[in-house]
Length: 255
Image (tube, rainbow, N blue to C red):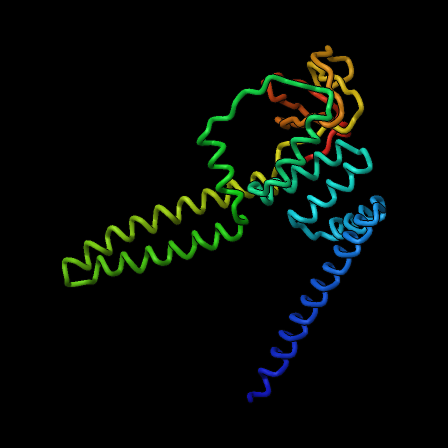
């Protein structure tokens, strides 16, 4: 074996071992939280799971369990926040959806929601089925296949190969473009979310980003809002019924 390759192999196996050790450590801490939760030690379970979350680890299961612990501790705004975060990572999970609806039923505010167009809703759900990086890889792969199909169309001497190459290239180009769009949408929903949960027990929506603004409406903890803009320490928010107003940025947490 070439001696120059050995250091790279050592580095590869060292990184692999480090990754496996980190994964095992995360699993141990997660399972410790499960054990504490099963014993009704909800705060202890929450502390272990939040340590994982604050270390940068993300998963639908982790967010879901954090939400359950907060719910048991009667911290409904935090429960809703983490149920929403779990939903973004696994929108098809029935338990996440069910518990989220239960938590939402416990908040004070009720607004007439403007219904989301069905094709927008399905587009969002499809984009969340897999991660943004996976959609991006699919887009890259299908684009490469598209280029190969174009080469068949250009260089093949047989008519049937030209026809197949042309139509297959169009199909791959469509899939590549759609996958790229879904990757971008997934990133917007998960990493650049403009949704937030009100955490202040009571907060007034102002007509301008200062305390002298006119009170437009009153919100209570647990209400979900959309962040439209930010000026200084104020967020402009939009409610599910379409109304807008300004609230202090420390009165909500971004999903």
